[in-house]
Each structure stands twice: as C-alpha cells, then as structure tokens.
Image (cartoon, rainbow, N blue to C red; front, side):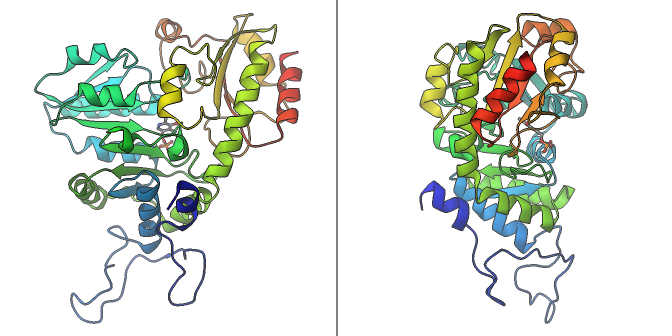
Length: 378
Ligand SMILES: *Cc1c(COP(=O)(O)O)cnc(C)c1O
C-alpha cells in the first residue's frame, strides 16, 4: 500500500457485526468472557481496546514500524519511552527541544537518576564526544521548535551503536513528510494532538516501534502505568489521519508562499523555514523530508515585545494560541508562550527574541493568509 492509501485503509476494516465503514468507538471498560479465559482477545480496556488497536495498526503502517502504542498525550508517550531506562542510564538530547519534553526530562526523570545531556545535534561530530558505556538513548527532535533547525537523522544513527536507542519526535514533520524508522531510528514519537489529529480537538500521543522487542516493552508500560487514551480520542485521531496527506500538502504549499512573502517584507528581519535555500540545513531537509512542513518562524527589525504584540493582535485569520498542526492558521509567541520559562539570556542564545513570531500555517486560501499577514505587519 502507498502512503496515501495507508492513511485511509491501514488497520481499518468495516465492523463485522454491522458493516459500519467507520471504526466504532468501543466505549466500554470490560469485555464478557464465555468461561474463564475464553475471550476474543480483549479483557479490560486499560490493556486493550478495539478502537485503539485500529489506530495503533494504522500508525505502525504509516511509520513503517512493527507496532504502535497509543497514550493519552504526547508527553505521556515520552514518559513511557523514558520508563524503558533505569537509574544510571544516560540520554543525549537535542538542546533545542519542545519545552514540555525538556521539563519532563530535567525535572522528573533526572530525579530518578537518569542523566540527560542537552547538546546541539545539528553538529553531528559533537555526538561522539558525549557517548560512553552508560549512553542508552539519543533523543532527536527535527524540525525543532521554534527555530526550525534540521537534524540529520541518518547521520545521528551512524554515530550511535547497538546499545543505544535512537528516538525521533516526529510531531512537526508528521509521517507524511518524514519517516525516521526508514532512516535507521528505533522509535518514533508523536504528539497526535498536532498534525495527526489535525483539527485542534483532541490531546493524544503515540510511539511507533521498529521491533517487536521494543513494542512489547512499551505495551507492558502502557498497561502497567495506564496513561491510555479514551476510545473517542482514538477515533478522532483515526479520522484526522484519513486526510493527513491532503492537509499537510496544502500546509506545505501555503507555508512556502508565506516564507517567500515574509522574506521580501520590509518589516521582517529574518525568516526561518527549511524550504528556503538560505536555511542552514536546507540540503539535509531536502534529503530526509518529502516537503518542508507547515511551520514558519520570523523576526522583526523592530526587535521589541511591543512590536510583536501589535502584529499578534492585528490578524483576522491567524489566531494567537498554543499548539500547531490544525487546519486553521495560528500565531505563536515563543518568548511568552512555549519558551516563557527559559531565562532570557538562554533564549536569546538560540534566537528566541522578544519579537520572534511562530506560524502554524493552516489550509485556508493562500491569498487570504498573505493579505492577513500583510495587514497585521502594517
Ligand atoms: C505538543 C508537542 C509535544 C507534547 O505533546 P502533548 O500532546 O501536548 O502532550 C511534544 N513534542 C512536540 C514537538 C510537540 O509539539
């Protein structure tokens, strides 16, 4: 099956009892057994639920993995992955990563004796210096938030060894644009809240594992710790995925036009978009992605919070809100929103100024979006 067919058909079959073409929402906590041990593979809904199983099989197909394991949020998915480690283990991670992932690593798991080294993974040569016998995981996020840096997944895999799990947070790209397991990674994590769900109506997370061994460990943790999604949320993600390719394709087209428009705008000082030839790792993005994504960040010549505030409150279609990957276009202000808890000096070092604006470009008409931005900038 090709990707555009998988989004609609993989893991999904008409319901055998009624013929319903849509996967039913199995809103049940338990399943009746005819006699002890005589059941249909489902005993209790924390352990397994048919709506969740359909979604897990669909996600495994999209990422070319052995199996997928679903969770109640993206961070619950990361939490389950980190629970595969033990005290004394070390993790090498991107220094420029989603704030919630950084918080979970540095403020929760560090307490339990797992060590994290946050380094610049754009510089692949940097990795070897930090690997030792305790290194058990490399955590990659690409493209990064909000600077849209690109990390070379294949080059990271080449630096690792058989004791190390390479994990990729694939939320920003979605499996339509990037399939890390095919580039040699062992695990892929998603905040399905974003592009997979795609309609800003659900919080959900998933991990796709390359091997049965990893999938078994994660299913064990899923059942043992219990951060499972409800069946309605699984249904919403399954339904969102059916149009993933169409939505992401349009978002990419719109984002590219917007990046070009911003690049020539007199009030804009910098544009960060992996599709522009001026982007530092454009050549890597071109090799490992099938498109450059729907996220664009830009900075203003007038380098103040006030200048950004004026733009952020003057648009009609770009709403100021956390999150990304929905059909509607959003503004984000990293300095006060996603990266508000990072000290200013640290923020400035990576380019997160008070005037940096992040766009999650939606699937509206491109002329309306450009007109909206032009007005807001004016
Ligand atoms: C949103 C996000 C997460 C966290 O996912 P939740 O579903 O909000 O828990 C992790 N990584 C990235 C890149 C994200 O954008």
